[in-house]
Image (cartoon, rainbow, N blue to C red; front, side, top):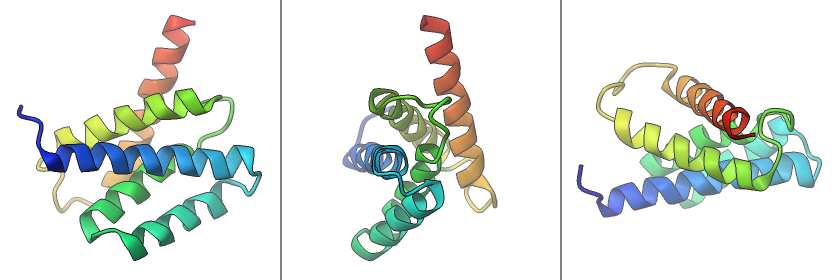
Length: 119
């Protein structure tokens, strides 16, 4: 698979969605719902529709408990994983509802298992 500019944008939006949501949720203490909502609204206002959806989907991962994603570095790893999954499944799940939550859950599970494996 050739890496395109679109893939870079997807990875950057995934990184921003996960890490900013995680930071607002855990470091600033506003909680998962407010962090997710804030990231979603800002993404919807400033990004094109497809990238806003990717950022919002990625922010679901940042809503995870501190027990699942304990550090900002772990959130960064999770953002890379969610970005790769979004790039890999873009055409497979086109038009199917629940893709965002499923993608975020799968990314979180993979991240948690990687952390536990290397611990």
